[in-house]
Length: 300
Image (cartoon, rainbow, N blue to C red; front, side):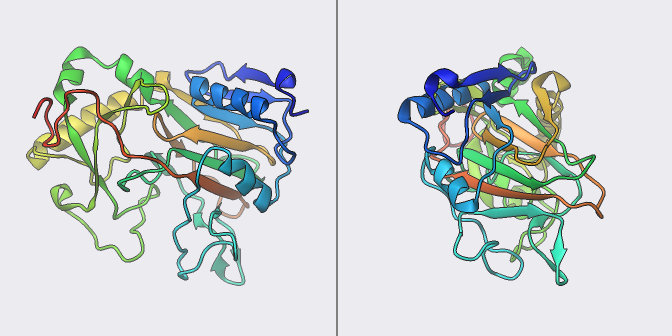
């Protein structure tokens, strides 16, 4: 266990994703074994580790092997989700003593990239399942490398050099973020500006980078033109041929690459329990392909 030679990489059979076997993440991982994990992550974008019994400190320790961690945003009460562990975000529909213990509830979470509204969005997210419903709550991932590679040439030309405003007012479940005001004009939405096609900082490959659909805006276009273009891009990006679905079991740990994969979550029965603990690895500036200008068009 945790020996480099014992690691098995089992591709999902879909356009991304692989299961890694032969690892107990609660135990020390030698550098060579971790190098194999990183290589598999570069190749498959999403990694699954089944049957992991991880305390929160050990989840944090494993996550830190991928880089410095983000601190979680405060919950509705203005506190971190877990006392003395600000790196942990609780994703849950459970209420205890009349208070939510986590975020996102039991409803659908639409296609998105985690926290892309930041200037330095996280490069990776790790999610560990503690309780899961019998049905529902599956997570889908979509390969944004393929979304670029298989994009119709005319659509690719339409977004060459485009810069997207990533709205920060709403989360992936459509809820208004704490302290934010409702936005009705996407061109006035607050949030980071990122190129619609980015270069992956490790692989050098191009990936479509969309964040989330609501209130997104293509810089420099009339709102109506931006909406029409984004509708076409999102229709392409969310084609089933790019996606793979993960059905959760207790003890699953997933890590995904926010630089080249989007994800969404199915709704589930609200009376059931789902508890997940998440960490996020700090990212870097979103790099545009060579020749893209800051004004929103290539070569500007």
